[in-house]
Image (tube, rainbow, N blue to C red; front, side, top):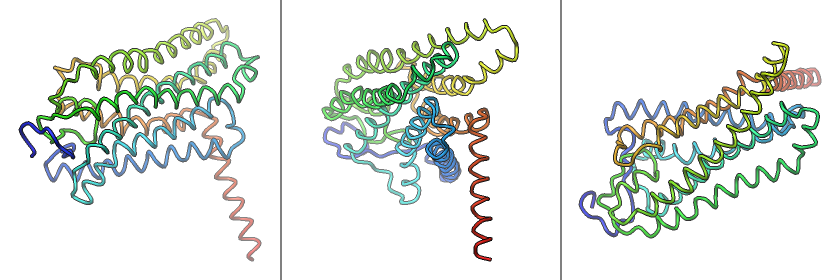
Length: 321
């Protein structure tokens, strides 16, 4: 059932990064390390935003949403490598595979929209600082975050419905480490013209290009305002407030361009999964690293939590003695 025309397949065989045993061990250890760092980093960011009142601002509200998305996206895409290595079972049902694609595409769209919302937040903070908290109030932040989550789900529903209608496959061996839209379409011998049209119009133009344009416009005004600041220290301080966000945006869009914005005929699944591994494993860990290393507010919040924990332990020791 692995090869030939497979018209009624009920499962896919996930080949993974490599079929070489030695490389599988290396990839497994690397993925475990990256996944634990991703979980630890993003959970730390999320808890800091929730517990530290100094971080109860619009930018960190969106950052907490981004952390949840990163954790979810990494779990969805990397869990198959971990399960396959531990259990030896590298099969996945067709329905589970399609649900995985649906969730992964939704979360990717959500991330791009949240980054666009964060770009607007930085625009208001730098270009209209006196009215920042009037414009970016809690109600607007909640509406923007809700729209990001909902639109990502709505955008991916037609993809899921279309996948469920596929009936013919040339093979059920998927040359990837998780279920992604490109390798599934490569396997299918059904008519996939709808997917190529929908991915280009909705996926690329609306879900990808529109957030990019909105973010780009925000930064045109931001850079223009920064350049108009007379003092060099003022320019540095203004740029520093948006440098972390800009770094994350550039990393994510660069990885998506290399992974998806190439002609389908020129995509080599063997090399494409390495781009995908970077996108799904490395990018989510970059967010907490960038915001922890480059952001003074986050570093100060970490120091406060450490000091608070130390003081609590000291007080508990005194009570016991």
